[in-house]
Length: 115
Image (cartoon, rainbow, N blue to C red; front, side):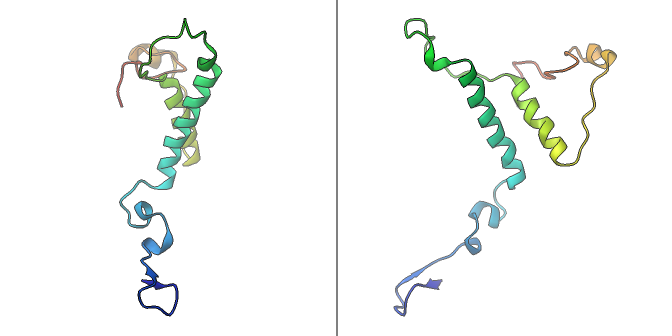
């Protein structure tokens, strides 16, 4: 309890020393992991903005749907995260890409793949 005045009924309860409760109490994801989630959200917004979905002719707009974003966006964020943790990204050789049947530059999972 932290008392805000001399009145014993005027107090607040401070959790996790004032930090984010899910981080301070170790029940949430660390901020370095959440960075990836937020980066994916930003890339998704940029992807939609670049395609000017809002500017489409109302008569030609597709119906409201939920779409899966391209895997390349996830892989771009993953690349930056690996580099941020001090990791080194290597490039697939032509033989490796051919063996696992993916493009050499990615994406490395089929679009239908669910994480």
